[in-house]
Image (cartoon, rainbow over the protein chains, first blue to last red):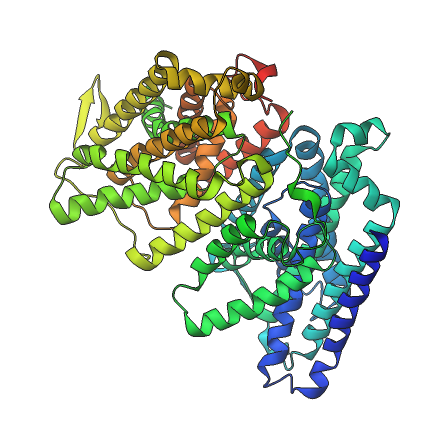
Length: 319
Length: 293
């Protein structure tokens, strides 16, 4: 198990490291490749974030978009009041922390009482609440029209590209660290048998909340970066359910509960989506739904298939 | 604050909430046997609403007559869904079933968007705006009909569960699947029945939606969330509780929409949802707290 993880980790790092050369070869101002990889890295990070909570810890969250949107709004509100600057690392860190704090605040009561789809529904509700509160937020959040940021600061995609690459590597590193350390063992133990895990002295709640907060932190960072790229932060786009739907799909298709599954899934699906956007612009979202259904039914272990992604073997019930 | 306004808001809320109740009963049944919350329920409701809308638009069929076409069609769709999508993964636990439902929701929403366009639709009949006056209260006829449909639907399901052999099998399976299997109940059969019933109720809720609301392909998600809130309020696996939960949600929304604004009403219902999930996940109306959770 450990050597396999190591192999997957090294492989994933190599794939991503090759990507650092891309802006040297392709011109980031005109090349589609750079934009494409930028999006792919964001999806890798989000898929990996979901993987930490759902794949390793077994808690299905459908609320990534809540943290993504929150991260974006921290940047938008902070920047428009000149508290933080353009591509400000501290600002992005603050965005991630805001998301993580929210995850802890919501996670403790939700995770201590709820399992399975109750938790999924609770997090789904969280995204809706944040979206609606933002719409009602008046001058502070600029309501449904959203906040327009000074887009004149943008001149090249290169920094965004490297930050996204860094985030993807960070997500991978965090996941790798978690699987290697005792934390990972505890998380998998919680996923596989909660009662047994508790009996062996694992503080279940602590580890569940930890995984949830780490995922929220990563999603918040992604939202922050996307805000620096789009320059118009509005509730419909940033609290869109797609920011949960696509990463879930990528993680499941690639192989949930594995290190490189989300990376493979995210890269593969970003390609599929981009092609679909060109070839079938109208009906491309239909495919995302179909793909989720088919990958669960016929590829329950994901593209990474042959490796053990054991999450689907256990029947979990609300006890 | 004059008392008759408060009373009027209460009546509106009850009539409104009955619709959430119908949808919540369907969710509750599916949860009872399969232990999954069927996220795509709201989207199915909207699909049924489109069915009712087009029957009216194309053939001038009265929406209350269309019940006799939409509901049986929904029952069949329910059987189809179970056999095609869930049968294979039913044993694999909550995780895959939840995600399949999630995928189905995305699929149906976008399919409807392509086929029916994103335009908002509303079914306008000659009696859509008709209101009865009862003891000084104005009661919208279509809303009253929704309430009647909810009561009839709930009664029908309760009778089915209590009086028929198949219904008893469903109840047995949701109480304890292992024991039910020992006495010869096949899970697939029971699951098929509950799925069909759940979708049938979604069909009924769809007709109710079509007569009272404007809807578009994506309004199902919010509607489904409301049904889940109703279910969380009422307690899982309990027909009367689900209906009461829906009515309570309707009343909460009605009052908060009046005293705050329409936008805040939704925030409050989600907040109530989160609070109930956090502090009383077994639901407000569940008599038996140990059995279901």
